[in-house]
Length: 110
Image (tube, rainbow, N blue to C red; front, side, top):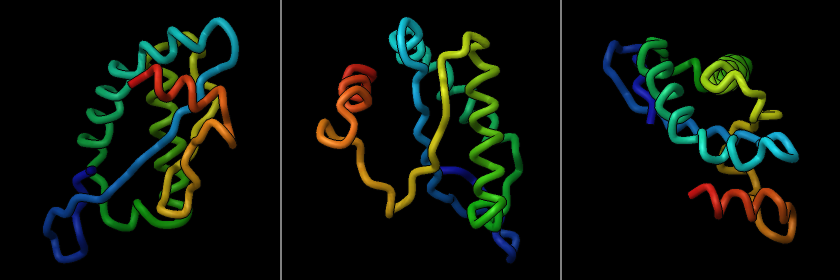
């Protein structure tokens, strides 16, 4: 939940979920272990970003996703993450059937 200022000046909390894709190979496990640190950096960025409700729609949402991914990259400087995806209600879940490697890593990273 991300604090965002609404048009009437009140603070509302928007749902924002991003899925980081780990780099394949020897960087997978360290990337997994770095997630708590990266998560903290992302939360600090989102709090300081002074977002508004319109930042969670359309192109501005895509820009927010890119900025958050940049925060994740800079938090480790190790090249652990190969990409990202903004998760919405229509995003299919990761399952062993559609992505066995990600499903395994997701369960191990918890």
